[in-house]
Length: 182
Image (cartoon, helix red, strand yellow):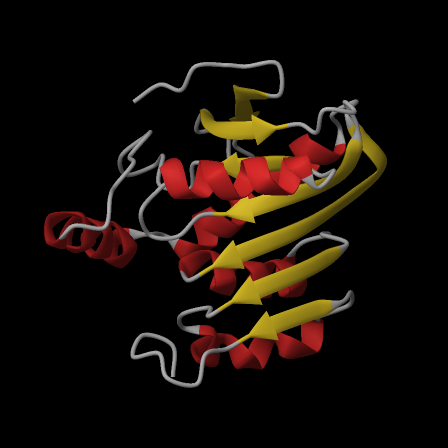
């Protein structure tokens, strides 16, 4: 579903670094027109209404927020709900997600956002939930993001050997009673 552009939100295109094409991203800009950059890494449900609402919230708080479509290599523009069917489809997309390519797309998103005139001082952080929480952790390990914050990042434990690569601030929020993120 294509989203209607407003004065502060629109779809943008991001060039993949591997030459395979470009992918979309939802961009939310604060009413001031400028602010620090924030790449919001999606959950397994795609760039759905929830992710756009989170982006809009952070834009209201003064950030220039980009939510890249990280499932574009599998199903561009997918937006799933939280029904049993949505969960089933989301897990299938997650299982087929190429994490290495996803991280290339995260770096491309960070770079693209950093180059936007709305972003002050070229500072860009990463924020993510669930799959996005792990991608936030990996962004701290593999990208030039200025800061990263992850909430209940699923599968971080399988990538702890990369922690030595962290050069910038990282905060992780882990739920005590989460069956997907123990």
